[in-house]
Length: 218
Image 1 (cartoon, rainbow, N blue to C red):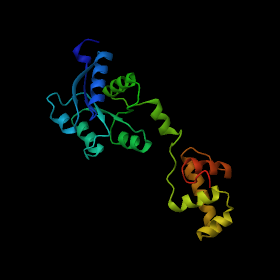
Image 2: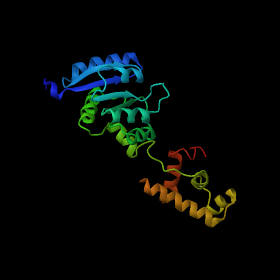
Image 3: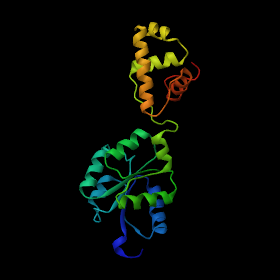
Image 4: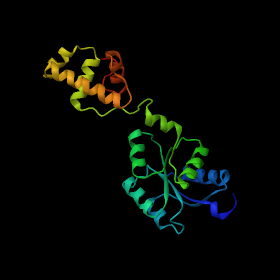
């Protein structure tokens, strides 16, 4: 592993100096195939660094610089740099957006350090890497992917989930019973596509509570 050809030249961008220091130390000791060539706290510092472009950048998604992450990713992509994002947050929407914009990996800052090394190696090889924790969040699990419902669909789901018969739901929303039924059908279909079965009223109620459409006490 000591040969220079296989050394991954890594840069870290993170505005928490403590984390930056810890990561730098840790990676230096943990992986002899990764060479830390830059550890900076801002995006401009990365671009102007004498070692740039590097092979892989570990980029903090939470940098407070108002530069959209998609822009950063496209800049890195055009310079041939592979990116692994780190964030304090693991919201599925954020992760998806980042991966769609071209990030190869996404790590939550609470990850085990060896996962960081795995992600860097995967990115270097051009493979995407998401930790198991995030993978679960993306594919279901708590706060997993609720389908996008319109405001009216949410109202129908809330009332029906709260135990109202279809007739009452329709009456309260000022729509016909047929319309209320077609809303329910659409809601169930949207959930089915997202991988959730809300065929029964009980299942639908559970989902409504889980997705914050219905409060538990309602």
